[in-house]
Length: 546
Ligand SMILES: [Zn+2]
Image (cartoon, rainbow, N blue to C red):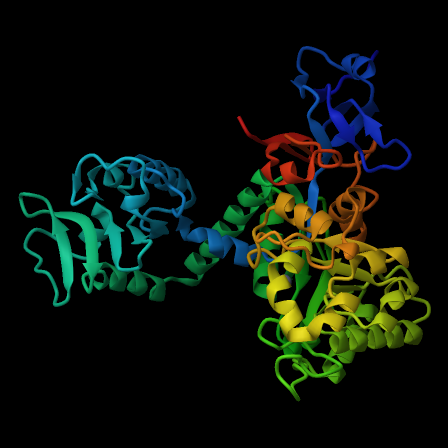
């Protein structure tokens, strides 16, 4: 009997990232794995009545993006305040808030920000002085108080439930320096200006203060789910979470046990040094399809913008200042010892050239001390500014450079101020030099520091062109193929998952993304308009643009 597939993708422009079979036109998936990669006619033979078939019309297909450095809870937090900056009508606000309610339990406050009635294409109907009236939004949010900050920061919108909680009614008088907007009958319409804002806000703050442990946990769960949804929309199928405390790791373990993680998470534990010392021993490693916990995250220095990055020579724009070492080397070494003895991978945040130098020295020392420990794949997160003489050490020591393409272009404006031309040219985001000596670079966004968008990050990686149109030492850019590798197979390698992820290869887990543009060949100025058409995770279509 002929084998049958559950999902077949036909007529694709497939880049598999598997060097033994780089291009294909069709993919067949059975259960959660890739079953066939190759030609349409062969894939068609695997179709039966129950097979889902997608005709891709020549669209670009690649392994799902692996964001190798971002912050899950931070990303979720950035999404909890519903972003209304780009909405074009009050109807759109109602729709967004109404959709959001499914992530909230009854009674939970829904907070949004950024709406501005003057930026709408049409006036809200009905309206008072151009402001919307709450009724329609209140109808779809009867279970939850809603508080939406105006873009100006000088007004808020509150729904009926929020006004009920705050005891606002026709009789409520305006506070000094504030206005409650009212309709012709004197009823509050839901808009509170200036000092009247606090009539509502104080009840939200009260609510936050009174939450139980369970509610705080549920709040984390909601943030996790929002972050995961955001990833899926962006074509991200795996996410390296660059540091969560044990409290969050425990929650993630519970979610994984009940199969509630929609993307694959590779979570680095980051907690206080004393807690790491106490708990790392005997801490159970987790390795399953959706959750891997076998890495820890440490910090040796701060960031360049705030002049916290630890440098060999003083800052160009602050004489005698070298940045700072935020965790004593002694503590870092102690944790590295613990990690290697308990089979944890170590990832240390290092931005400045001195910071990177010290981490390379430390890793080298540890590796020498434990010659029997192999295949360690320890990482340096950011590896942002390197001394020329340290560049080759990454490959020599087998250390992964976990870098963020988009930091280069968004930081470009102040990198030269901080480092001066020579240091910036020689060692800032030195992708080309690192790759040329054989370093494995994995790529990420550091979301929510940057947007979670792999498209914007890919563009920065292959152009080093800022939004203002300037190039930041473009000789260090990656080729498009290298950039795709940094976002797929290298991320899989950096998390010990290259046998299951990172390429479209028979037998691997079926994590695939379909895009509107061919990232390898489209004109450079079209890269940024690339849309995610489908995201497939574990063999299932979890997002489709239509
Ligand atoms: Zn980070």
